[in-house]
Amino acid sequence: MLKSLNKTLLGAALIGASLAPQAFAETTLNALFMAQAAYSEADVRAMTDAFAKANPDIKVNLEFVPYEGLHDKTVLAQGSGGGYDVVLFDVIWPAEYASNKVLVDVSSRITDEMKKGVLPGAWTTVQYDGKYYGMPWILDTKYLFYNKEILEKAGIKAPPKTWDELAEQAKAIKDKGLLATPIAWSWSQAEAAICDYTTLVSAYGGDFLKDGKPAFQSGGGLDALKYMVASYTSGLTNPNSKEFLEEDVRKVFQNGDAAFALNWTYMYNMANDPKDSKVAGKVGVVPAPGVAGKSEASAVNGSMGLGITSASKHPDEAWKYITFMTSQATQNAYAKLSLPIWASSYEDAAVTKGQEELISAAKIGLAAMYPRPTTPKYQELSTALQQAIQESLLGQATPEDALKSAAENSGL
Image (tube, rainbow, N blue to C red; front, side, top):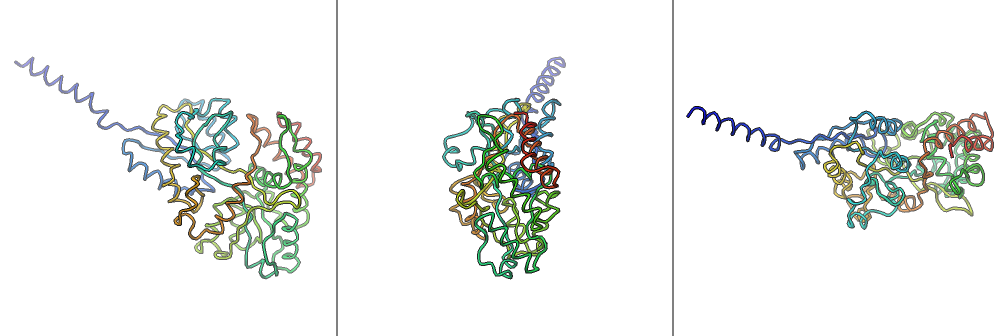
């Protein structure tokens, strides 16, 4: 009797033990994001909390690093055996990440509804060689921001439509003693400078590569760098621009110390926030200018996507999280620092209200987005170009010689 009771109790315990993990199953995902531009850290945490409420069996650990650390952190984690399930990646990395099997091909997970609903330009963010390596999440380009009050004081009726006009208006502002250095750029020796350079390359109709080989050392690529150097040496550009990242540009503009600034979408609502900004209510935004006879506007593709790493042991849960974060409902609720990837979002008053000027600029800018080169050797190419820009700005080399060296050191 005792033996049979013990057997029954043991059996019950074993059944209970086998059921316990399922009853309290919790998958933990590790996700890597950046701590600047686009969605704020608070936004990402709020989105993730909403996901956790809807999916109580999935826990998401968030880690935030500066943009400059995002690539290396992702790549190094792959070899450590631990690492991340979900990572934020820049439009410039799919070629490298696909070639080195950092990200999982999710082509089979992309639905027809997603393909039809997302803006065509956004898909370029996550594609390489005809395959999809994630979902687009941040749709972004750089715009020309301007201080309406300063332009008015200078007697300027409308913001510049060409880069030459920008220089003329900046000179008028400087000559009237309104600001000593009216233009702010992010030209630090980092990817930020390449984004500004790419915007100008697009305006001048340049090419980064032709038949897989560097082509930026002549034509529009050379014209773009010559413009940067002329703007810098003329005294119209804030001399600290050579050390500025985007956040530095935002702070200078918000403080009222720049009449013009090139920056991402997120600056519009931050610079219009009276709690933090001295220029709230005076912020104008238009597409980045063009070049007479060559372009009407200019823009860089600064979009980013969310992907599943090949090291993830929970790809299904990771995809569930990604589809939640990139869903139209989530994006529409957080459309003040980053604009949605969904075409029909732009007909939603909740998205457009209070940022009509930005949406108007976005319709032109997002359609003109120019890609940085698609190559698995992008990091080497970018590093070589960053150095060329710095050397040219500092007068250590002519734009011609600096770009010639960059082409030789690009690894292509």
